[in-house]
Image (cartoon, rainbow, N blue to C red; front, side, top):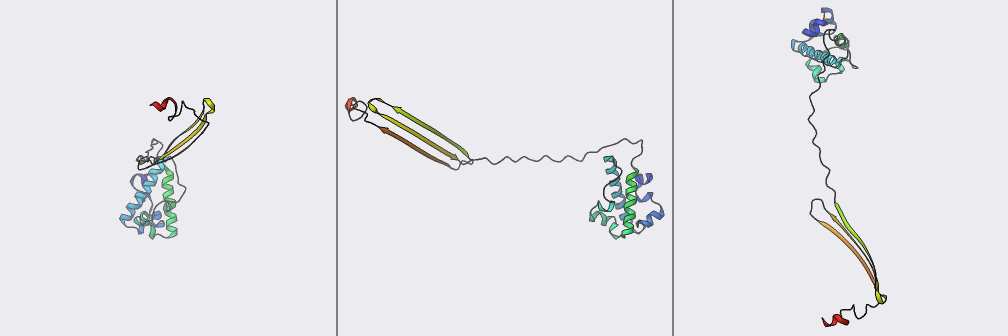
Length: 184
């Protein structure tokens, strides 16, 4: 089996094993594809430092790979025998003199971050005024303004509210119609 890992999976099998797992029925292309599949699994096991996989050999590969290797034409008994022989080839592992070699998978291209869409901008102000003057005059005031701007700049909505109250007479000196302002 050690020789099979170097030359090919099927080359390391005896004539009885080849007949039991149905390799003798396969064409040269199918045997080459089968050797490549087993060789790939052996390489993955060595790179991962493991001596076995959790699923059977024929269950780990796609239907296209199995068809190319001729495994789809094998009986259930032949497929089971092939699974155990492939597991044996994987379990042998590397020679003790071979150093462990990890080959990382190719890097995945970085994802392009997509910025969040800009949110609407909300601005506003609030004011409150209290006043008291001579001769009994007083006033109160409040004002609220709110502006919402579309992030694309297409529109702005503004809402304003004001409330002022006054009481009393301002007298002749504060009125524009009486007092010193009348001369101007």
